[in-house]
Image (cartoon, rainbow, N blue to C red; front, side, top):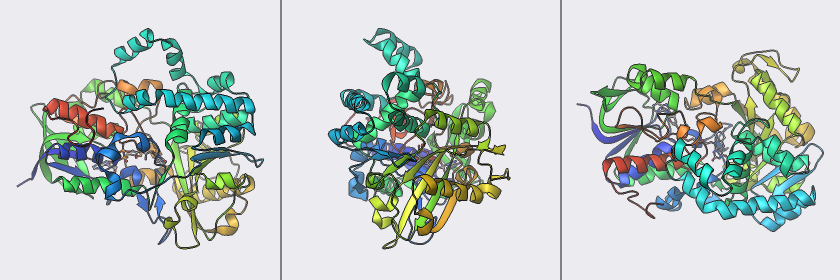
Length: 532
Ligand SMILES: Cc1cc2nc3c(=O)[nH]c(=O)nc-3n(C[C@H](O)[C@H](O)[C@H](O)COP(=O)(O)OP(=O)(O)OC[C@H]3O[C@@H](n4cnc5c(N)ncnc54)[C@H](O)[C@@H]3O)c2cc1C
């Protein structure tokens, strides 16, 4: 006989587990089904490069999580989550040996940026202070279901400075930087953050996201989780088990079973059936619509919308094991930061990299985010050894050509090693001169590898859907799914393809649990601090 649950959650990433934990704490019998052989989704930590070297396969920085109510509610620090908080959350290194280091301490940040431009340093002070004055409002917006499009428009139309806020929400980094900064270096510091969500310098909406992301890291930190980001989702799994919930790995869901316009459970790819009072998809929006529900249940309009959903630029990740520490040409502050952006001091160069990527070319000088894994958390590698991870923000998923002038193949499996070698040479020549001498081993995860590991990395992307202005808020992922509900009343969606979007904030899972609790008449949350 098939087993029966109050709720089944599809996908054991941070959002699926968050939703499951709150539902379990509210008294529901919850099962989480995960396709991969381990829990975590984009918080996996594995020995990808060799025994004793623990790399975060995807997310490294505990950033948005710092202002999330979830870790406090679930008391994750009592369940194995220990944060290491460097005083420099991020830095930006340029090929000429200069760097900007952003400190948790605002005065040190201003002093540091003054070396590049005293005027921009004072501007940055105001920008980071502005985050402080809007912090509570921002946190509320992350951890609440989004307002409807109409309410959002009304609020822009009626609030003081509403039109300024509307303009900022749509402005590109290039336009905003031109009216805000005097130096290219500081412009690039922010432009790299836009790159995290796939926004090139001329893309609409890049400016506000870049300001917000940079400010969150300055104010809240960019911590590493001792031993790896996976400890966050492992702690959630412990919380879930303590509240009677279960997780099954290597359990890919094939479809949601629907009778008389209500879900009755799910069917695994193995054919096994499990019954449930409600189903929550924490996989990705396309899979929910096209596969779990299917076009007949989802209906033609929603199916058409999800087919046009934009995924954004793919990424690749280069993991390196080193037999000693490697200094940055830009100096020790870069080496002490959690992560370092590596770009030319030129919006044009960043723009060029995105243009190459979007033309299908392997970019010659992409935006690279270098993670100083073991400089912050030595426990990730054997004694005396080191790890650095490089996230390449923006590579084509389908390779049509090559801007490096060195790579002839067009298939990721065939070219990824050559591209990894190219990137290492690129980084050595400009940023980390000793990298080759110290290199023990490197492993490259191409966009295809990312997607093979996790199907939620659709087309090798990070975001569960690009953060375009028309794919945000209640429009995320698409109209009709933007409030965590679906056309089937007891099927919900809570992956980061919903508001507030990507990043380990646990926000989508939290907000969906809130909506489900309301629909079921449960009090929310049943744990912790109460409704925000
Ligand atoms: C390279 C990279 C670097 C990043 N760096 C950072 C960072 O430093 N800081 C940060 O905050 N964020 C970072 N992110 C983003 C962050 O990791 C993600 O936004 C977030 O973890 C996504 O969580 P999620 O729960 O929404 O989805 P996911 O983590 O994608 O979880 C979805 C889960 O659903 C499962 N699934 C899919 N299909 C099925 C099925 N049919 N049946 C059962 N299960 C299924 C998947 O296997 C997966 O485990 C990074 C992401 C990447 C890829």
